[in-house]
Structure formats: structure tokens, C-alpha cells
Image (tube, rainbow, N blue to C red):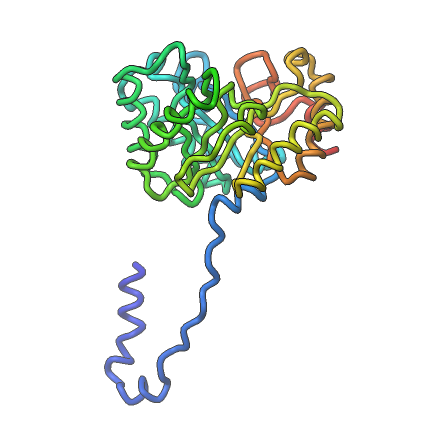
Length: 312
């Protein structure tokens, strides 16, 4: 339709060269360069995780949350979302379940949300991946390379569990390499060796790949001073290495996993500090489970205690 209309509009000029000469070519308008996704992500506020199967299934049956759900997610106050796909041992080697996640990504981005998606769950030093896991990662990377690199960030895994940075970094770089070969334009995301903790991050050097961001996972809680102490170190690491860092899983203290009042109090302490340090936070989670569950049903409405913590 666009090409036909353009041909129709330019036809009179082709028939009237004198008129075209008199008018002259339109002056080229300078284009403002697009802000790189890495920088846009660093300016985000608060998002939420949609945990494992919640994004694609209910009561062991596939389902699509759909555009209205994602619009409600935004209206709940969230400006980005994080998802991750269960490991191949839980999904099988076919692409049916990854395709369901790709549908969720499409609906979320259509609602204007940047999406962080992990292509597998855990990778552990004491349970090394075999050919099946590496092949599944490559296949999923090829599938999600078809998403919009201006809105979608790919991570190889949800979390790593390794004894130290020296053991983790070669594996991290191999994981990122699998994704980069499949998705040369996408921003990639990685975390530290110990469940994505802040302490493991600050011991770790960034990869050579320049188009990466970093995730931290935190279930420590504490008062504002304690939050400032640990995340001040994260912010210092960010500035030293010129990286973009997101707190891509934020809950309350572990002891508050099922105590919404105490968890909300933790968020009232942590969120203002993270805003001041310019560290976007992604809350855990819309989930079928009981720990740090933000919602009473399958809609986007939050428990009142959490709504209050977000608006405070």
C-alpha cells in the first residue's frame, strides 16, 4: 500500500520536470540518533518478573496472557518485564514451549514494554551441561533472534551457581558466544557466579562483548543503610566498568517470602535507595507459587500491601 501510494504521488512530477526543477529537492532533515537499548534500560524504573510457567500456562494447560493482560501490567506501574524459559529437561527439545514464550514477548513488546528473557533456567558447576543443553540453547537463541533487538534483551540463563569467578567466567563467555552467533544485534545479559548476587558481581570482570548488560538478584532486605551499603558497591562497579546494571530480581528478605507486610516494608526501604543510585529494579514475581507472590489471582492487580510499597 505504501509503495503504490508513493508511486501515485510522484507521477505528476515525472510528467512535469519543469515543475520538479522549480520546486527543487526537499531539504534532508537531520535524524536524531536512536538511544541505544543499553542506555534506555539504565533509565528504567520498576518492572516485574513473570515467573517461569506463569507466562504461558495455567493448571498445566497452555495459555496466552494476551495484549490486555500486558496493558494491565503497565497500568500496575511496571515499565519492563523479565521472563525465562524452563530448562530443556522440563520442556523437551521441541520448540513448542519456546514458541509460547515468543508469543508472550510479542504481546509484551506490543504493549510498549522492554523484555528481558532468559533462554534457560540454571547452569551449575556441579551439574555441567551436556550436548543436549547446549544444543537447546543454540536452538532457542536462533528462535529469539527473530525478536526486536530494540526491545528485547536475551540472557543465556536465569542464574549460575559456580564456586568463584574464575570457574564461571569462561562458561559465561561460552554462553554469551552461543547467543551472539545467533543474535548479532541483540543486547545480551549476564550475572554473577553465585545466584546472580551483588557480592559475586563485584568480583567479576565484564565480558569482551560490548553489547551486554548486567543483572543482580537480591533477597536480602534490610534497612536503607544496609541497602545503600551493598548497592553502593554495585553502583561503583557499574561506573568503574561503564556497564548498565539492573536489579533483575528483587524480593524482600528471605524470611519474608510469605509475609507480605514485612516484604512490603523491605521494598519501602530498598526502592528509594535503588532509584537514587539509578539501578532499575525488577520485582519478583507474578507467579503460581507462594514465595514473594505479588498477585492474588492470574490478573495484574497487586496485593494492596505491594501497591502501597510501589507508590510510596
